[in-house]
Amino acid sequence: MSNIDSENFAELYESSLKKLEEGTVVTGTIVDIVGDDIFVDLGYKADGVVPRDEFSYGDEKPADKYKVGDEITAYILRMNNGQGNILLSTKRLETKKLREEFENNVKEDKPITAKVTDVVNGGVIAETGSVKIFVPQTQLVKKVTDLVEYRGKCVALKIIEYNPEKKKIVGSERKLANEERKQKEEKVWAEIAEGKVIKGTVKQLADYGAFVDIGGVDGLLHISEISWKQIKHPNEVLKVGQEIEVTVLKADAETKKISLGYRKAEDNPWANVKYQVGDEVTGTVVSMKPFGAFVELDNGLEALVHISNITMRRIQKPQDALEMGQEVTAKVVEVDLDKKRIELSIRELEGKDVVEEVVEAAQATTVSADEE
Image 1 (tube, rainbow, N blue to C red):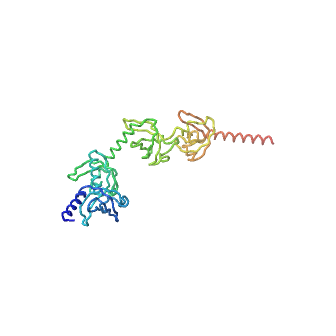
Image 2: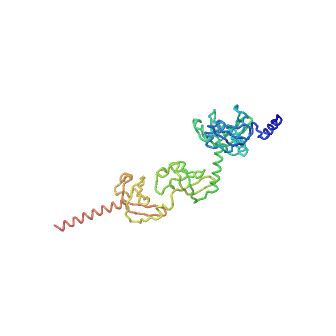
Image 3: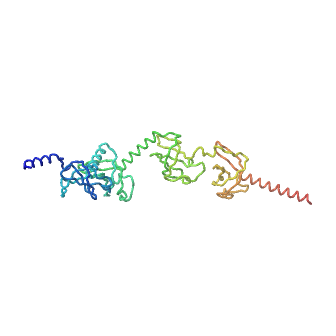
């Protein structure tokens, strides 16, 4: 072959190859994976190589994602890595995509997810790709004494200041949380209706009831609506974090107050009361007040024994004659279903026992007289 032919061949070979430049994106075929390095056929006189530190931000390894023969797209860092190969980076390409996505989200006021990488004076630094976002402590949702607790955590943010020229990007976790809470509240108030049964989570317990989160809005479950039985505190039935079904008793959109009910109508012990005046019943003393004692009958019904009906003896308080948990037998003296009230008298049966003792004694005396 003459020198002219050799030169023509070289020119033809060069022109047949791809025109590659630093800073551009290229796609090739993986020809080998050696350790953590990926070798790529780019249709060029030199192969490309993606070293481990240019592969990924995470702990992912090349063999976890690729195999020989797969196509791979990468960013050209240098046309010669010093060993005759083209230095490629999939990480830089990922960074470029993440930055474009980030900028689009900022323009459209969409949430940003970033990982907290550092704690600085007055806040934390969160990163998404190569973008660093400063989040002031006042814009964090969780109140912590040491911001180190945030390090390594992913946070959802709204960008509240964006000045890339001055490299000043400020995010707010609190603003996004407030917006999401407002959306949830609007949804709840748009769908809520008295009588509707909904699921909720017990958020807080108080002496007078429980606050239940029903989808971003708190409703009050009064202690009287928790159980058909008398309870001293909501923690006898409920616990914080418990998921329950509640009924909306009242919803006032103006005052933003919601009243809830937990006890179920089918469990109402007053629905099928079988007791009548004159019946003798047995129950357990469950609570005592200055005016009398409450006795729990079967089915969860509680009846009142007024202090005047506890005993024939003169007492100052129910505790003078009764004890908590004591089993007693009493006579039903009143049943008022409208007022959901049953009154009992232990005294009347006590009097009955006295009369029976007198009668038995009299009978015994008569028998003895007849025998004489």
